[in-house]
Length: 101
Image (cartoon, rainbow, N blue to C red; front, top):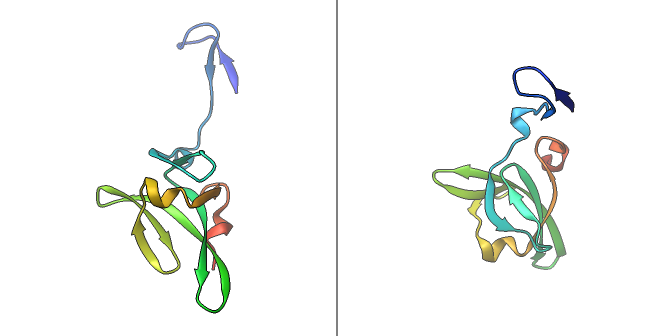
């Protein structure tokens, strides 16, 4: 972060941003009311028949004109109803290890 007194004008704030770290807001929120952005990694609990509770990590993506989640079993659309069962646990830029099998 730096104050710049050149072309931008005196006292304007200039921040360096990694373009890959910028994600579009989905318009959805997780179960805690936190805004969900493209590239976020969500965690969802599923009841696995006979094996108890299983946690899945899912990546939020924009694909074919809609917001989707990608997990180990493929992709699915995400909406306000399904997002309320998820929790943001990181993002693909800062925490890529969250998506490793």
